[in-house]
Length: 483
Image (cartoon, rainbow, N blue to C red; front, side):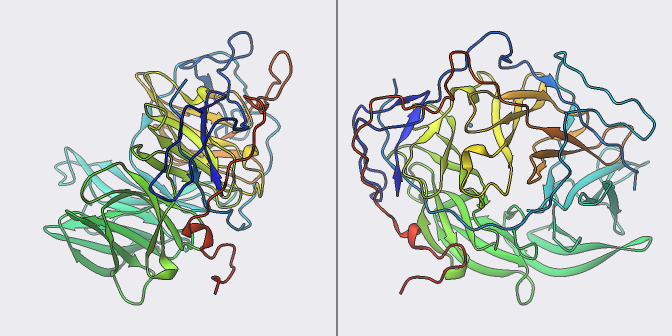
């Protein structure tokens, strides 16, 4: 199962390379789907011209020609799981409180200002958590502020936030992560110790369950596990990285493995919280490559991305249902945002429409439930520029990046898609303590002259040889490991 990489609709066939010894070389004549440069003209939004998004619901205060690239080996698709559904929206509209007029805007405007506090969401988007601050007089949590944890409930008819203050203000560098049962994990730094507790509302107060502590110089929580129960953290060393399970184990923080090299990132590849993708830099130096840690096999590590021997290849986001991968790599000669499919022999593509000069583009959410249809998944991207942060909406099957202004107070880089294709963006502005803006993927317009943007970029040639790697033999979709 192998794929080469193409860029801007042209197969990169100028030689071949062997990536990390696990992928076969790719030659010329590769049949590939093109990603042509977006055309200009009426109906197209130029980069940097965000269209105002609209959709926000008020709620109560209580809440990524060039040299040829080696083949990329990808693992086979993962299983599916039913996700929460939302009512489909016929239009992208601004939803105001009951009795207010419904508005829709078409004019171009500058992106809204955003707040930048880290915001973590459970895998299903039901709960969120962040640190927030309240102004105080002579407080110890900062210059006139007191930090505390806050849990958001997002799966009900209206979003709401529950403050979880404790006896003393939190430090601004503390980390929070929500669990599927509504409790919030918090990591605090106390001298050389990293302490972990679970916070939960208890009537008018906040309950706290102390889990234990880890004595390390640095330790960082990973994104919430899809199982909703476990939470993991990484501690970087000089030659290796420690993987810890800080909750969901038998008793307190538990050391799982010492992983060779310096690992970062963290993308879950399945719904069970077993396959964890990490970006790994070799201990002796070298390019970053994404590897997979199988927590069901004693943290066994196998390669995932192998685009070129000297390229830095990172996995940014993955959808277990469709197998869609969002990748950042400098294999084309500079950092580009691309996409591929787990288990596919098709090339990794680097669409031109995702390349915005002087801006940073990063995916943060993929539409779930699109089994065997990765090209149809709607993808939400955070776009950062001099004017602030705004939202990009894109499908692999399309040739256009739709740029929309974010709601004021957007918790930038956070959001979740429903199975029906509705994007929920949490925000909190001066008037609303907890709310969600609803966006829908704009309708794709057929390009002038016909064609869907998926025709081959060169004459068909012989199929490439697909070379499997050990990861392709990992137990997926609940299947037992081969004997």
